[in-house]
Length: 159
View 1 (cartoon, rainbow, N blue to C red):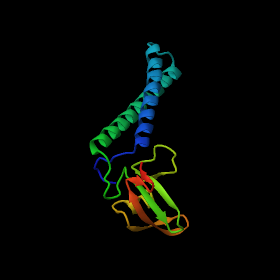
View 2: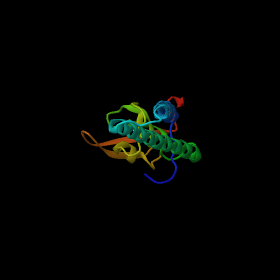
View 3: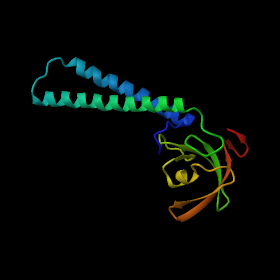
View 4: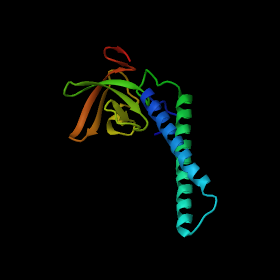
């Protein structure tokens, strides 16, 4: 992936916002246990205190990472409707005739069968293509192809 800020789908944004809310609540709980123990007892108490401090650092790092990702996504704006890119909604027709509408996201933030990550074989194959283009990619069963049917909307109309 490039270092350019990449847009994210509404579903991905919502999942990241929920994760950051959960992390902040967990951080508050861990921080409260640190404040309660003003005096440290034996070595086991010291180890427990150190473990909680390390947990705070881990939570702070993840909160910062998510905050940065959300800010960059906002700066990137909406995905292009001319070329498949990160954040795009793309409808493809596979070689067996099935048609699916997929979202291209930078990272997997939730289990969603309509989401394809930009670094997956299909996601990489679709990036940079336009409506009507044929793409090929490595699938679990071997080489596969798909045609870009539409970009930015479902076959039946706008999302």
